[in-house]
Each structure stands twice: as structure tokens, then as C-alpha cells.
Image 1 (cartoon, one colour):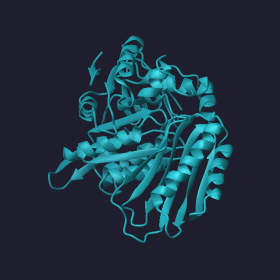
Image 2: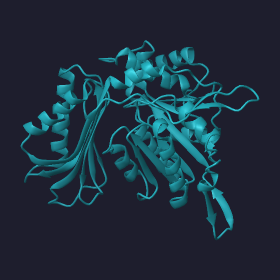
Image 3: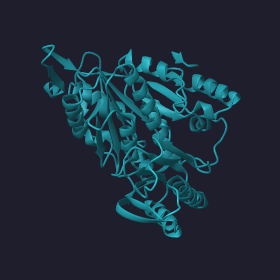
Image 4: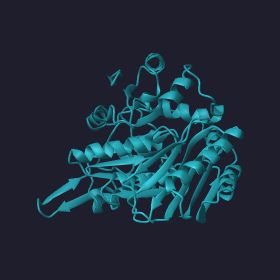
Length: 406
């Protein structure tokens, strides 16, 4: 085990003719960054993008969600130079929207010509090796180097799962099944948020991982502080994906686990009344909803909201990824010009429980505030449906072609 930081048809679509060099160029690397809701994938991808761009690499990003109005896409735009190198796939996981993923890769290669393409799947999705990476290689024959499947884990959640320091609340065992399957299929476990563990707990986690998953590579990072990012990039760009075997998945139980999670997306505009500040308004609203989630006994997968200025250069966002933890308020970009009072508003809430009940909490919080006028343009509340992969590579016997199902 290596430890860092402590541990074919579509081929022509991916080629670009360079008139200056008279060479056909291909995208070099495809990084699939998986992991459960709240693990810090989006923050990590921002850091990967910043670091790679500083090295002179051009990055393409593909975000993914069950619904529309995705904050991760906004985060991608903040992390990159423009929007032409970003694609968004909504309405289902990559595995169920594989044709769209392939088309997005082709469009990005043609229009943006990235050196590295990073894709972030839905946080409640698993079986990515058999339904995404292997089909890209064997069915579509995409001419890219597929990096090892990296699964990002919140250090606190994985420590609790392995029997260490317990969190205030845990997911239902069927939701936990999805989480465990993500770990099982990973080629590389990226332990994020190590800064939130004390020294003793971190050492305890390293010991538990070495005992329970000695066959996997472990990388310990803090995406928020940029620790371990260089080592992770070197790891991902210097070895191809090479799974020893493909895991079995009980799709009935997988579907039950996903359906236990409620998804709420809201999108609209907020007009702050005179004298009110966007960061204070957003923080207070998030706290009100957080308390309601806690009182209702809901384990939080990821609860995040944002306000973005009209100029698009400034954004405030709130995050909560564990029940009972304090809501974090962050600002992206410089302070906007004085006098701005209209902002784009997004809510992405994923938690255990009925989606309509979760949606009610958001509306009650909005109705109870009097500092702003909120106009909702789009909203959705639902439980994810059963995953139905476009292709699933099930086996790869020696000397034979892989077996696929549609």
C-alpha cells in the first residue's frame, strides 16, 4: 500500500486538429472525483483546478446532480477562467446519463481543449467503476488516460464509521450501504478535512484504515487549507485506473438507500431591504433551517445555500455537512459595490427524510424573515429514483472482452 501525506466508436469526437502544429491532440487525463455528500469534493476540485492552472494546465469540469440549480456549477465557474470549460449534467447520475457525459466530454474537448478533465458525480452515487470508467474505456473507447477512481471521505464520518470517535447522529444503515460501497470500489481513498481531527483521532483513523483497507492507497488532505493537494495531483496524473476486480452491488438496496435521502433545490432572486447585509441575511436563514433540521432529527448529507451579486463576481455561501455542526459562512470574490440589493439565490439541501418536509422547513424560514423580498423561479423536492445505468461492465475474465449490460 502506498501512503501519501501519511499514508471507439466515438474516438474521432475527442480529437482536435491543431492547424499551427498540424497535429491531432487528445485530452490527456480524466479524473473522476467521487465521494459521499458533504465530503468536500467541490472544495477539493477547486483546489485541484487552481493548482493545475498554476502549472499551466487547462482544466475542464463536469458537474452532476439529480436536480437543477446546482451550486457546484457556480463553484466551478468561480474556480476556472470563464464558463466555456464547464458542463453540467442534471436529472440523474453519470451512470444513468452516460451518453450525455460522453457528449459533454466531446464538446469540451472541441471547444475548450482541456489538458485535464475533472468530473464530480452525485454524492449518493456508487458503482462508478463499472458504470462510468469501464464503459468509457471499453464501450466508448475514449482516448484519455483514466486516473484511479478517487473517493473523497470526510475524516470525521469515516472515523465514526470505522468505530472511532462517534458523530452526533449517523445515517440509516441502507444509506450507509451506499457509503460503504463507495469505499469498496475506490482505488484511492482521499481522507479530507484532516484539520478537523485532533492528533490522536487522526492517528487512530490511520491505524483503522490500514487495518480495514490495507489494499487501497490512502491520501490525507485538507482541501480547505490546500494541504496534500500537490501529492494528490501527482498521484492521479502518474498512474492509470487499473481495478483488480469489479464489485457486486445490490441495486435494490442501493435504490432504498438513495430514496431515504430527500433532495431540495430552490433558485430565485433576493432583494434585500435597505440596511440589510447579504452575508448576515444568508447566515441567519441558514441557521434557522439548520435548527429545524436538528429538531426534526434529520441527518444532514449536505446543506448549502448561496447569494451571488448581480455583477457575478461576489458570492456568499453557507455549508453544513453533519447534523448539529455549526453552519459555515464563506465569501468568494471581492465585496460588491455599495448599493447592490438584488442577488441570485440558490438552496441545495440533501438530508435524510421526506423531501417535501425538508422543503417545508426552507419555506417556513423564508416566510419568517422580513429583511428581504424573495422571488422563487424554480424549485424541486424529491427522493432519487432507482439507478438504471446505461452500461454496466460486470466482468473481465482473463483473455476475454468485458461483459456489458445495457
